[in-house]
Length: 70
Image 1: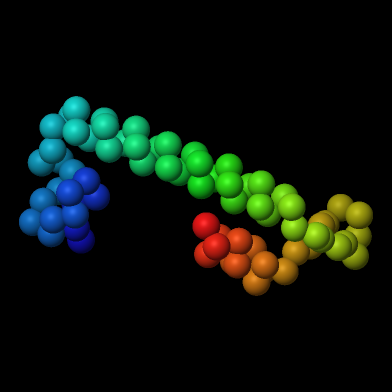
Image 2: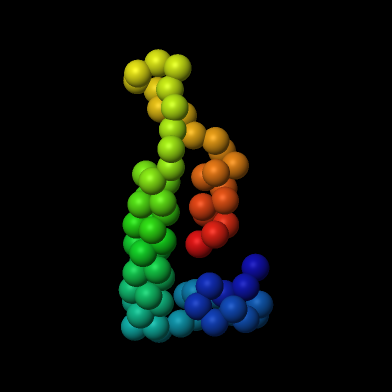
């Protein structure tokens, strides 16, 4: 498995300085937060129907399409 920071197969995260690890985490967390917000907004925009009032339903294929569309 390749290093998540530099992608070299002969490296691991622990070989990088704490500063490099922190910088990587800041960027990665920012990307994850943006992706989470985007996907949440897109999923909330789906039309749904319900057989019961408590259980809204969407097609799984629609959710997968939204995720892949990101």
